Image (tube, rainbow, N blue to C red; front, top):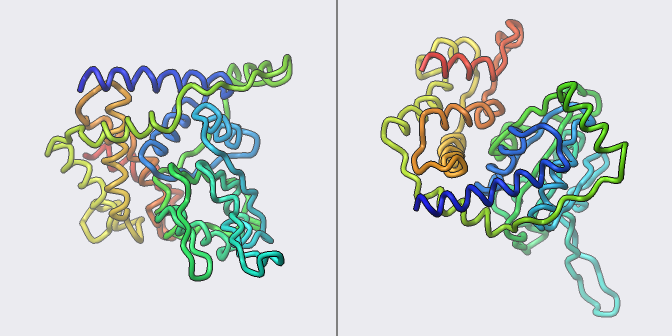
Length: 317
């Protein structure tokens, strides 16, 4: 098993390096997006315009040779523009289902919070069940299937915040930060000085399947499991943690518990280990929990964020 983990780790490193030829910096973001995809989950990327969120998703699709589809969410986008619809074919005198852009391996939901709730909900079934239902018929989506969504954190005019039920279907929420001066210079050099060579395919989805299946065999010690579950339960105000009682309306769901253990197992494999450590749990806690905590007005008035609360929770544990 250790030899298998070593081989997978080396193959994953090649994927990471090839992505790095087109994406400068953002290594942690890239790793978490890949971990989310290995786990079969969906990822929400939040950051200012121009930080390379769309480019990252397109690059991953190219490096892994997966079918990529981009949906630009706007207020006038309809659910059928995503899922597809039945079209009457005159020659056949019957209705034929015309697949929408959601029928791809990687679906980029660009600026997802610009679409109306009715259109946002068109992705709910796809994200959870990997199927699309139109009328009385249900269609299976390609395998593998991932939704990688983006949104701008500072614009509120003309946007529709994602409801908690849909946020919970994202395994991770990742905040894409502005690059450093050195990284910014590299980006400018890469994109303006010469023609950019597109990244090359170095693996396919079978690599993700192998890593995912291997990760399922990675043991989680009782103490580590208890620690992870206590992180989840303490986010619920009724369980006695003072910060939760003061600032949190609703804590993390059972999906958060599943996500934190699954992601920790994958992280252990990608770090060449056959065991989940406390550090693995801590490393994935923020991207798993931040978007799943519903804060109250007192948290807003005290300028307390979900990330602040998770930091305090980890520090106290």
